[in-house]
Amino acid sequence: IRSGKTIELSVFDILSGDVVHLEPGDLLPVDGILIQGFDVKCDESQATGESDIIRKMAGDDVFNAIENGENLKRADPFIQSGARVMEGVGTFMVTSTGIYSSYGKTLMALNDDPEITPLQSKLNIIAEYIAKLGGGAGLLL
Image (cartoon, rainbow, N blue to C red; front, side):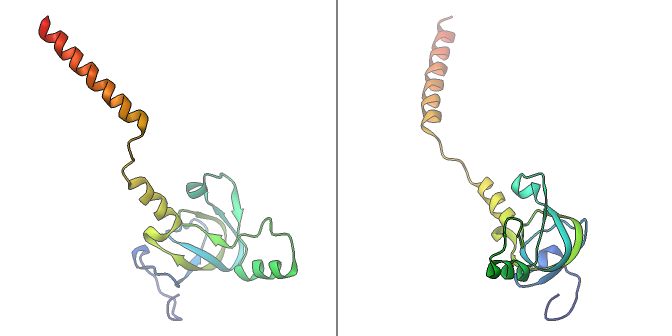
């Protein structure tokens, strides 16, 4: 839903603030907060590593539970990118997309070149010595 109209968009055109409909089987490319839903359950194992299916509550319900001092153990209105909707239907508001989503941040962190550790630098020096020693021994024989 964008500007009050229901339209079909490519995942590349979704922006923060858009309201997206959820249905079973959807793979979510963006982060968001559940606005309303009926028995929405998501598999976030791709993003979190947990194999459990997580039941989602609407943001208003969680806010009311906080105000009333209720148990918040199962109160989770947040939907992470990379999650798959397993059950239920609902709508959620997009909070972040692309490299700013939780899944995007993970992928960007994997793209960074790792720094050389002290152990790696010492092993590189030893490898150079072995190569020089092996080359010298090869020339003598």
